[in-house]
Length: 268
Image 1 (cartoon, rainbow, N blue to C red):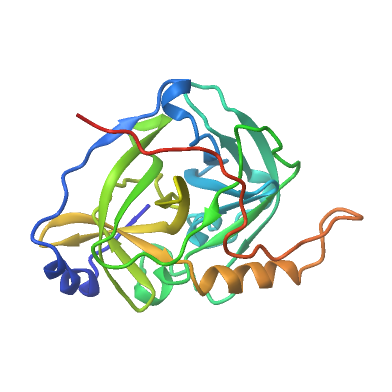
Image 2 (image 1 turned 90 degrees about the vertical axis):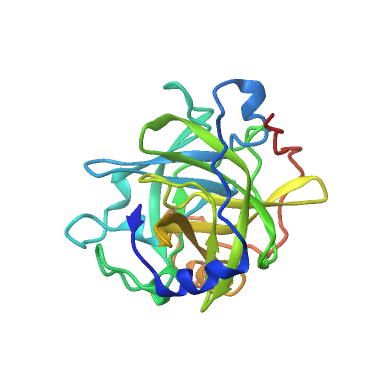
């Protein structure tokens, strides 16, 4: 997870009177994790981990900068492993990665980033085998969130690597040049975390966490607006040759997903 101070984020801080306090709830039991198992830890051999979410039975969504090593080189697919629903050393499903494709307009700048990079900071990774378990249903994509909307985030992070955490409610401070500024509590390892909105009783992914920033000395999260960039990324992915003989790639339209019955929990 990259940490930056973004002028745009500071300008948007006036949209709410105060930043929300963190209410991260560890999803340490099967009951608490119900509906969130399709979020997983994306392990990267020799580097660390990011967070990713299933958007098709063989496709996961994460941040594009997770595809790059410390020296700025692209990480080979064989170094990735997706561990869906990982908690306390056990995953609901574990898959290797055949290929990893970042947004065609994303430019990696190492530890330095800007709004233009955050706006395109998404990637999809093709798994070596589909995940077909009934409790691991791919998430649908939501319309772009608006300033003042309440969202939630499920993430792994530094100090909570062994189980995902749910922040039921954080707030969209605003949008600028394709960057969504959020009050969500994220940390190193949370890159690629799905930001959810609830629609028709089910969670849909509205953004992907890209970086941490500061507003008046307080931490916020920066996410990528998916509305245009995700379609461009999936179109780019679909034009690439399949890895396996007889395989195929297909553009995922916004709104594709079966109902999974996940819900945000109430924190007393």
